[in-house]
Every structure is written in C-alpha cells, then in structure tokens.
Length: 305
Image (cartoon, rainbow, N blue to C red; front, side, top):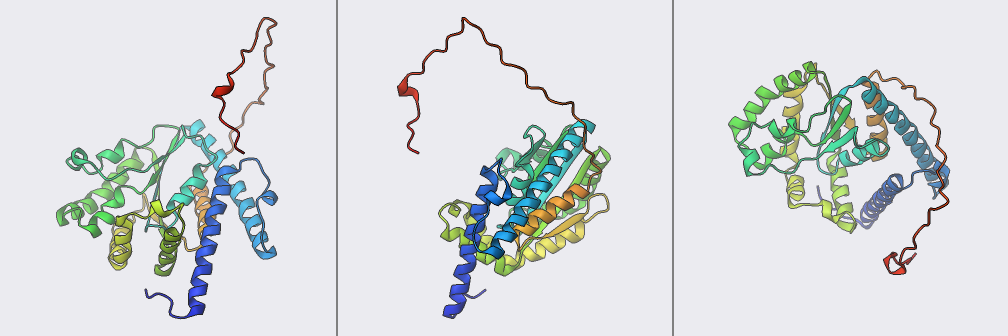
C-alpha cells in the first residue's frame, strides 16, 4: 500500500487516525466507568453522540446477557472454549475485554500464551494448550490459540513443513475429542482489510499509550500480508469442521465487530437466566468496647488530585 500522495489524502488519513485514537479513549471509558448511564459517557457532534449512545446502550445490554450466560455456565456446569484469531490489530483483544469486563474471573478467564520455551518445543504441540482447558462451570477465552501453527509459525518459518502438515492432520481429531468430552468449542476469525490494518498500525505509532503493542513481529507480519492471507485461507479451508466451525467477524468497524461477536456468541448456547434468592445485607455488628486505631499520617498516599 502506498502512502497518500495529495494533501487531501494526507488530511483524510490523519483524520482517520484521530478518530481511531478517540475510539481508543472510548475503550478506556468502557473499561473504567462502571455505574453510569450511557448519557453520561457521550459527547461530541449530535450524529456522533447518538451513535455512541446507541453503542454504549447496546454494549451494556449485551454485557448483562453475558452475566446471565456466566451464571448458566456455572450453574449447569458447562465447559466452554472460545478461540479468537485474526491478524495483528484486528480487534481480538478489544472484544475479549468487553466479554470479560463484567464477568467473574474465576468463571471466565483469558489464556494468552507466550511463545513456547525450549522445554515446551519438545512437547506434543497441543500439550501446553490442554493445561488451560476449562473444568465444569468455566469459560476460557484463548487470545490466539493452537492455530498459531497455521499462521505465524507457518509464515515466519518457526515450524517445519512436516510439523505444519501434522498439525492439519491432528487438529480436527483434537477438536472433535474436545467436543466429545463435553466442551463447547467456538472459533472466531476477525477479518480486517489491508488498508484498515495499515491505518491501525499508524495509529499505534502515533499513540504513545499503544506503541508497546507494536513488536518487531507485528511489523514483519505487516510486510508479509499476502503470505498471512494464504495461510489464513488454508487454515479456514482445512479446519472448518462440523463439530467446531469457523465464524468470521467483519472487524473493520471495531464497535460493530464487538457487538456482532457478542450477539453471535450468546446465540451459540441455550443459556437461561438462573434464579437467585434475594440478597439481604446483614446489619453490621457494633461493639461498645471497639476503638478504631488512628492511621499515621505518613502512611497515606498524598492526595495530589
């Protein structure tokens, strides 16, 4: 992809980057603000304000449904695995944050494994992933998964041709085995365009809060866009099985992608609202002989704000 050649093109690109930065700050609002109405979170032009209000309203509604799903999984002792795959900057981490934001981390946990160490490279390929599979009443979200072998390892030459082919021979049986064991396995691929990834990478370069997300591997993946495309097409073709099909999320618009993915995820399981007994807050006991000791002033954090 060539850089913009005219001033108007350059201005449009910078405006897109600026909008992406604003979106990233919206993400922080979503992650930090817990008990406010959507009206308190929005600002800007009337059209933008309406769209953001609609987004926040729907996000909070869906997160309420995710809480119901979590209760059902825990109550009925389901075992759920959700895989999130896609190119760098495709928005996988963003949707995982929105899914887990209101959930109990003891029920819904994220597995984001680093590159295998020397010992793990000598193990059965799936071994280190198996250790993170759920017990009854748990949901595990894999931020990248065993499909690393079909993607980054293939493109970057981190596995041999024999290991690559063995992966494709093994993974359908491995996933069928998981399903037969009672695990609900859902696989998502987040799809973005060449232009959109280019813009998001530029946004990370210009945002000091996101520069840490750009690794040398990410930059190399950008150069090898076409190789990743071929690897992705092969992966989807050879591992799209009836027991665990792939679902492709159109992710150029990050907000729509989050809402669409969560809506689809909720539709994959026949969850029901679990009735709970009313919660009564017990009265605090007060003892006449209790004396609260003062805290030394030197122990307090300075109130700069």
